Image 1: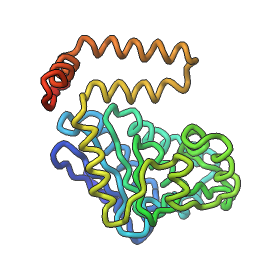
Image 2: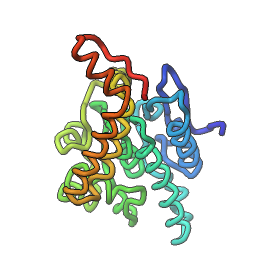
Image 3: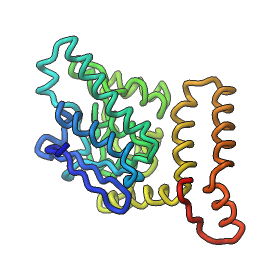
Image 4: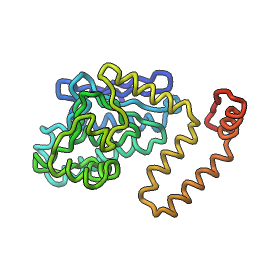
Length: 260
């Protein structure tokens, strides 16, 4: 697929994905969602790509929500279908088995906040703003906001943001656990890339299974989650990467992981 609303570039194993509608504050219309779904599939399936960095074009917005023009024309069946398409796209990023880092450079509202939450790590510019303001439009979050937000920040904080439609700044987002780091605007992309490359220097099989355990664990009982973790721990013990990682530690050198 050729992209009209995204910039997609692979450099040194990282897919750099930019939502490129700055004149519309990078709002998510149906075309953007479809193109992001294709991009997520590429991240998941192309061996050259080891991880992804996701951001928005311009200085004002990461993604400022859904395209209101699209929403204004939808009926109940259209609305459900649109929500399911958006949810599937975000879930593909979330379960791609490779680390995805969001560099939140401005407004991350509604679908934009939901897009950031589907990424594994969120780093925010000091100028970023977050919110789920859908109730102000007579709708509710449709791309996973009611599900991921409580898992990240707790039920009370999530309900406050969803029911009031209140926007919060980057520092408050960091305080409640919505983002992991806040940096000056000029350092955002470099910081996000440095974080991602640090993750990619780790054992890729270990990273993949850690992502899977953290994703699946909250839906399990504690005992089930611990068993999943033990199974992954045992599986990794059979890999060349584990032997290389332990040997490198004992020999006081950097490991050379091969994903085997």
